[in-house]
Structure formats: C-alpha cells, structure tokens
Image (tube, rainbow, N blue to C red):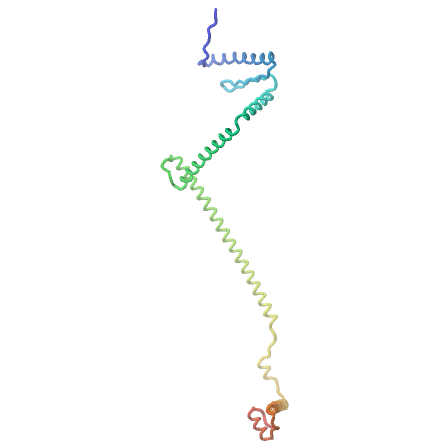
Length: 235
C-alpha cells in the first residue's frame, strides 16, 4: 500500500509539531553526518527550535567552519563593484544625516516655542522639564560667574590697599631722612654782633663804593653824609 504524500505546511497542533520536529531533527543530523563521512565534506548544521533551543552538528570544529564561512563571505563581498558600493554608502550616510538635521531643527524650533501644535501632552511635559532644567543650569552658572568676579575684585582691592600702605610707609621714611635741623628765631636773637666788626664792614662798603667811581677819598664831612645815606653808624 503506497504512503500518502503529506502537504508541507505548518502543523497547527503543538504536540504534533513537537513530535515532528524531534523526528525530523534527528534525521537531518544523521543525514549531515552521513554526508560528511561519505563525501569527506566539511559540514556544519545549526538548528534553533521554536522555543529558541540550539541544536548543532559539525564534522570538525564548529569555530573553524564558521571562520571559513566568514572568510568566504568577505571574499564575495569584496568582489562587488567598489564604486557602486561606495555610492550606496554615501547615499545612505547622506540620507541619515539629512534626517538628523531635520530632527535637530524640529527640536530647536520646539525649544524656541515654535511649532507646538503637533505635540502631545507627554511631549509638551517633557519639553517643559527640559527647559526648566536648562534654565536652572544657566542661572547656576551665572551665579557662579558673578561670585567669582566679586571675589576677584575684592582680592584686587586688598592688594591695592596693601600697596597704598607700603607707599605711605616709604614716603614717611623718605621724609624723616630728608629733614635737617633749622635755626629758629630765638637762636637768631641770641647771636651778638661786635660793634667794631660792624664799623669795619661799613667802612669797607663805603670804600668800595667810591673806588668804583674813581674819585679821591672823601673827607670827614663827606664820610658822615655817606654814612647817613647808607644808614651806617657814624663814629
């Protein structure tokens, strides 16, 4: 009696599906082993069940066979026309960058308070939180800058005060070194002038005056007149 041909389609019954999977999996692994032995071929078989369980078979080391597969795939990729591949990469990169630019421009307009009609309530709340956080950081940075400026100005003020104090001390030391003792009015009054010295000095003055005029020496009367004019004492 001939066996009925089974249609290849997904088995709806879960139990029947599991039984069929177990039977056919064992058969497939057996066929892979027979192919490797009979034909001296490198065979690697990887199976994942519907639940994600792994079943594998390798005629030699699985890592070696996978490495050979990757090397073969890389060689095939390198055989592709390089200019067309580079063009595709450039077009893909350009498209990605254009999309990023559009997204950033949209976010920037939202931060400026523009084009908000299309946003949902959650997006508006997220935008509000973002703006509040940014404002808090801006105010904090501004306060730190102002505090730093105030501290810097105070330090400069202290330095100027110290320099001014040092200059005052230097001026006082220079003034004290440059002072000399002066003759007071009382000391001048205590100086006694000898009358004979005063008469001799007066006669020398009168003699010099007449010698300059190239005239004869004056007589006694003229001498008295001259002494009176010069406000000198007459003997």
